[in-house]
Image 1 (tube, each protein chain N blue to C red):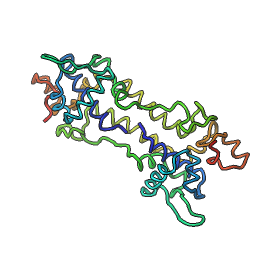
Image 2 (cartoon, helix red, strand yellow):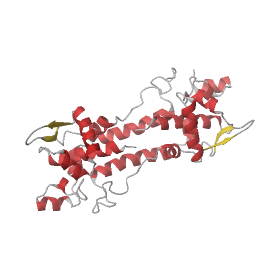
Image 3 (cartoon, each protein chain N blue to C red):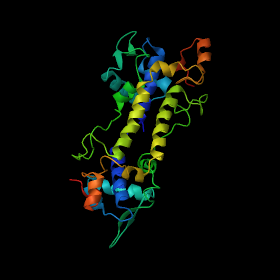
Image 4 (cartoon, rainbow over the protein chains, first blue to last red):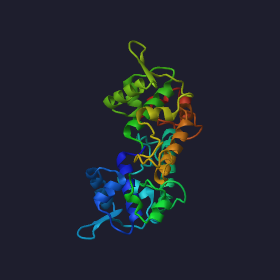
Length: 157
Length: 157
């Protein structure tokens, strides 16, 4: 239902949100997300083009998110990579259907609507602040990461 | 979220369900579904390979569904074309995550689960028996189609 590119973009954004407001290099994100660097570079370019992230050259530069993690939703990222296509009019172009969908297309659009709503309601902060369980991109539980004073996203092995 | 191929396969199966238990030729399905014949042929081959449909040559032959419309679900068709991938273990292969997903992958899997459930609960009969509104693949409302005694799926223009 979601492509490899969507998966990789989400990993990259989770990594950036985890390090925010600090910048990350493509190398750092590649290590943390286990995404091959050439593929990751293309994904990051798309995120920059869609104003999810910005890239700054030079010393102290790197990639950062434009919004803070509590303002950035899963929906915005997925939609930048592969928009969740809603069905607004009959895909067959049947005139009598128009905006009134038949049961087939209604059901497909309902499925897209549920996913859209769930993703709109989920911020990057939500993904990084779950109190229990495993932490995104990170082998150690979050409590251990905090106790050790290390950057979670770096601990991928 | 769903590809053109999934959309075309669903149209073809709705057409076949509408005509069941009669057989349809590829030409008939192509006209009813507005799917180009070469593309449709490939989609139908996939449906035959996944035992959704069967193809019989010769006079009186054609394509038919293997199950009756009340036994065939939307999920079976979507899954034959592009399986709804559930996330069962950490896609990054993080050992400590294993089957316990992080909040990112849990949210993605929940979205897939909701769609899977909705499609599992929807049969082809459900799509064709909605009492009101527009009828799949057909310009006329169902009541008019029945009154006129015509095959709904043929009336695409």
